[in-house]
Image 1 (cartoon, helix red, strand yellow):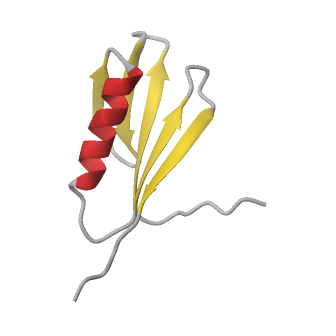
Image 2 (image 1 turned 135 degrees about the horizontal axis):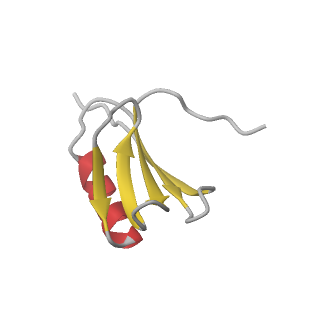
Length: 80
């Protein structure tokens, strides 16, 4: 069985069949950022998670059919 982390911030990169564009959406948020290409959407998601401090961050990248292609994890490193 695969363990899925449930803490931290999650951003999904999802293809919308309605507008035929790629969307970046944070879980539990109504905000959506729209891009023409998947690459641009992924780049924006990476920028967003790099700005978050103090908690785990994840980008869930979907294929056009909606299935999960990849999950990128950005870990928190504690410094003293």
